[in-house]
Length: 329
Image (tube, rainbow, N blue to C red; front, side):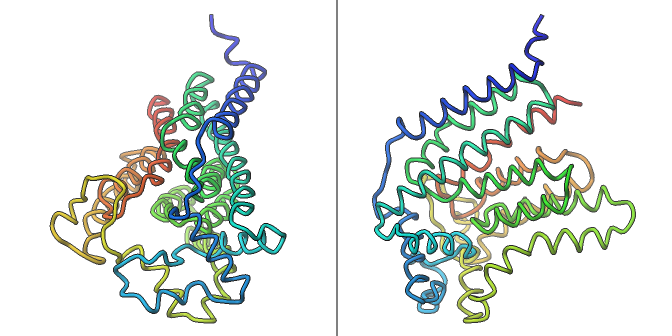
């Protein structure tokens, strides 16, 4: 009865219509919140420091590694790209932000397209349509567009890595490295990728893991090397700051570690214990890949003492992906 839903023409048309509707909504409907207290303004400031010949990571050396003073805590890929756009002429914050809003819109659309292609071959058109509608119109991605956080390119490259993993493994790890270069939240997903390598490589596992690890580290090392050499202490402190900083949240619900009055790295022990449990479940083949990814991100959101609204957009794609995986038997 619904055989027409399986045709490629209907799938392409459906995807095109949803993408156009998503682009329209995110560009014309979602209100732009351009206040300078949002993270994107501080990313712009880090780019300005690079243009001025300063090391943005050195500011953390005057801090206590507990209180956030809007330090540069990401890998430098976005800061370097942002500095490049400033040199291209987008020097004032409104101009610079307008450029990056368009870029984020492109990555947003790209993420929806990849999600569709991840879902459609598994469980057909209806679930693919549901997944892409969920991606474009859920409140978390709408919020992400409003405040113009840098999560879109990171999520795009993560989804691209998921699509490439069964096809071109080294390229998948390169895309995951690109994702981490923008924002390292999905570092907690990297063990799942490495477990896939171990479980699918019956011969030369050591060599395969080494190659995957090199690809995973490649872009991070290449973009970070100059800052690491210039001031290794400042760079390393900046990278570990999110692991030891005080609890902070955009919502009123405290984490279990915060309720125990744990601080610093100790406050991350509950989330670490739960993550290890998910990794073990996947290692033992009790759960499948996308289900493990969903649980990993759910653990991060429910147990990490630092919780901001933009984090929720990361696990939105994993709901339909896990549903497709579970229903496929």
